[in-house]
Image 1: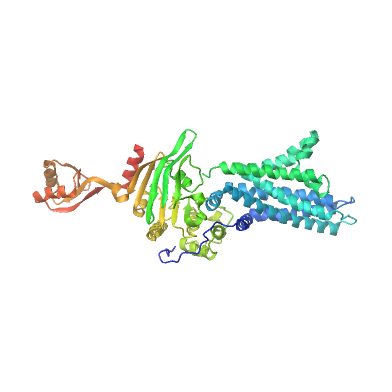
Image 2 (image 1 turned 90 degrees about the horizontal axis):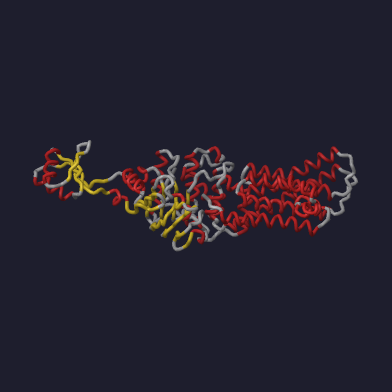
Length: 250
Length: 291
């Protein structure tokens, strides 16, 4: 250890706060700076094409349109991206790194907003890569598939990827507890809502984000699907903002 | 300058910080002492906007912490050395902080060298010892070379060399005009490091002043070649004398000139004459027990 402070020139320091683009870049770097973050990123890009390859290799049924598989596998990608979003917010509370985050950027609304933008960007990019790889797998392994509507389906899957990541970030911020956020989200989306759709389809159909992704990719119920995903984003972010504002860092 | 005014924190009907007020001047190292649960950490967290106060305020050069344009460039904090992601390397952690604060990436290697973590910088923090995490936290606080340092138990986990290094670091920082507030349970270390003491007990400030003033006892300690004879003369002069186990005489309520006058009148040869001082540990227990 050295003590060179007395004669050392002071470092050049920015006098103002970090800009929003800088904070967004920082949040992306934070998410991808750990093994868990990198693993989630890789899983979100590779799980869907891997599933597509397995399905294509094992099924002899005609595929028809590419939009259905793209939408279904886009839904799978979105479910993985939920975790990326949760880790970006709840993960900070679990590891107590939220203390450093708020010491450097005390405005918590700003922090949540930049995290939301960061995971949305990552979600969109990872979903785009996954969808492109799925399309590549289908093109290689499946013959006679119709590519009509591919552009719309691709766009829908990319948007859904961003949406699921933001939903995860909002719920993570609201709970400040990674296991609780993940368990709650997966139980609701994979358990509660499918049950609701079985017994009360008129309600279940209107709140299911996974079903909305699939419908959007196939160009069905577009307005309702966008409203469903937007509603989930809105509720998650508002809950995240309210709970974050009230929570003490002790 | 940091001004804390009437800072109060209540959780339900429990008051953990009760109208705490103090000023911290540039160029000083202030020790913040108190038993566990006295309110030191909560006070520091309210100063840095991590915890919302129930009442009162803490301003740094007239601004609340959250109003500072770049707080990390003004206040370097070490509140919890374990509040780091174990999956990141030390260097990655500091590079992220450097980006947030707005210092060049080259500064990271400077502070790593300063705290002696250059060789371990490429390893994951999960494999660091407590002392290494503490030094990483200090490195993070020093990135922007901020004018104010707020350290909560900075010597935790440090070996004697590390403690001496940290003492020199804080004193040098104050010598350069910086302001340091540190809380610690290591009373001996605090006594050698700080200029001023703030003692908190049950959420209230129970002592605030220069170390020398707070530790000054009310009396004089004297040693003489013929201690029993001097003791008799002092008692005859109406002074209250007590002999210590190591052969010194403690004369309560008398200053050195009074004791010298009695000794000189009796022709006593003195080998030591000084104001009586209390130990910091005695002061600490006296003040915090009374609170």
